[in-house]
Length: 54
Image 1 (cartoon, rainbow, N blue to C red):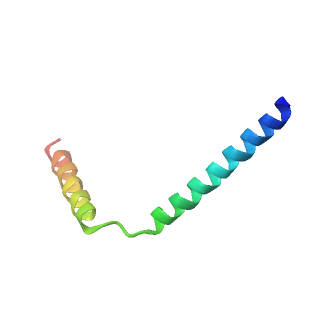
Image 2 (cartoon, helix red, strand yellow):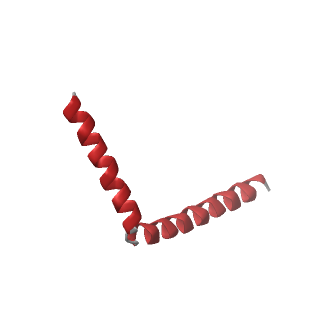
């Protein structure tokens, strides 16, 4: 009985893993919203300004 439970648990874990990969791959293909791009630009500029001060 334990072997069946272990196989079932592994099967479930694999299904969860596969579904998470599907969801993640969909998210990766979505374009980043403009507000996040703007925020990244601000952060990069701040980093560059700090590097210039060194």
